Amino acid sequence: MNAPAWNPAIEFMEREALERLQLASLRKTVAWALKTPFYRRRLAEIGLNRPEDIGSLRDARQLPYTTKDDLRDAYPEGLLAVDREEVVRLHTSSGTTGAPTVIYHTQHDIDGWTELVARCIAATGATRRDVFQNMTNYGLFTGGLGLHYGAERVGMLVIPASSGNTSRQIQLMRNFRVTVVHATPSYLLHLQAALAGEGVDVTELALQKAFVGAEPYSEETRDKIESLFGVKAYNSYGLSEMNGPGVAFECLYQTGLHLWEDAYLLEILNPQTLQPLAEGESGEIVLTTLQRQATPLLRYRTRDLSHLVGGHCPCGRVHRRLARLQGRSDDLLIINGVNVFPSQIESALMKISGVGTNYLIQLEKRGSLDRLLVKTEVEAVLFAGPPHTLDELRERISESLRTTILVKPVVELHPPGDLPISEGKAKRVLDLRPAF
Ligand code: DLL
Image: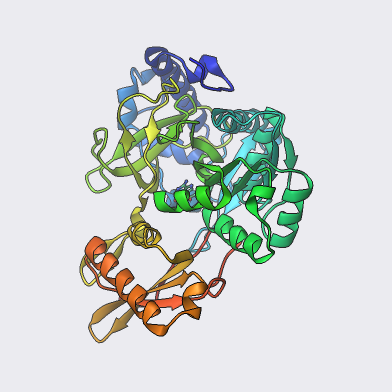
């Protein structure tokens, strides 16, 4: 077993031992949960008031679910399981509706989260010899501090660049011979365009790895990041409710995202029937925290869609792998009755040569019908050529999307840098259809 690892005893633990550990941790988690008014009520409803009553991991299926709305309703202290003096940090998130949620951490929680992120980093082969530039926002967003603490634990030289200010990012990368960066996929693509704009040849940089996550992206976009920067790009999945980054990460072999099962109990459920799904079947990720004291969460419905990857990873880890996320159940677009995930559009677009790195999906109502407008940046040289080149490309994109998503879009081509960019998570869909 030669794969790099931070905590081999846990990462390569036998499955049986891992499940014993999960059961013990689940009981502790229920004990912590019982300290909150919210779960005392929920657990009383199913007659569970003693953690010892949980006899096996299967019993977890009887536990109540927790949703984002529950977190909003419990705001600010309804889910706090420890004394206020024990809390050393909180992160809030506002989400799209603006109603806030909060996750509290004790020092034990921060240490646990840091260990999980350190494992993720080490699994990619990064070490204390690396120079790490963290290009995600520092603050209430968990990508900044989460990766920062993990990278320091590994012993990397950490540059807390935070997001934005692209020319300073480039300067830092060059001056300090940065070898590893962390950013959202959309920001990395923007950064690449800026590098090209400033005439920087990526081979002059020392970059080797990119940690990429916090928003959905396709395998084709990963390929693009890898080839444009000449790096390996490792997918990183997490959500504020489960600390933030450090929930699941790709190892050196990039065969799917290993989810740290000593810290999270994983279920993949059919989002309609809530029945468990088999390996390879796509459904909603439902997670229970197993180590968190201040805000334990039971069966949190993430709304994220993925499936379990079968077989064994060559790295030898027992922690199961999630496939690249397909999107969120609430992302699903219904266009004239056809179900389309934005990720399908991205994946088809990024396969077409000449297509650039930024795009926008716009939905409008025309009479009684939906109209799908796909705005995409294309390579600058195409605008310098004869107009029929652009017409042909427009038609090629439209046809290729029609065959993959079964909806023929109107395609609008833009020169590089024309479409809006965001420093954090990209906003890819603009749905202008009236809500009924
Ligand atoms: O985005 C935590 C994070 C920070 C993850 C840095 C990775 C890197 P939230 O802002 O709460 O937390 O957003 C969580 O983002 O439920 C997914 O829908 C989406 N998401 C996160 N990572 C990925 C990924 C952070 N690798 C929400 N692929 C999650 C697809 C992702 N979607």
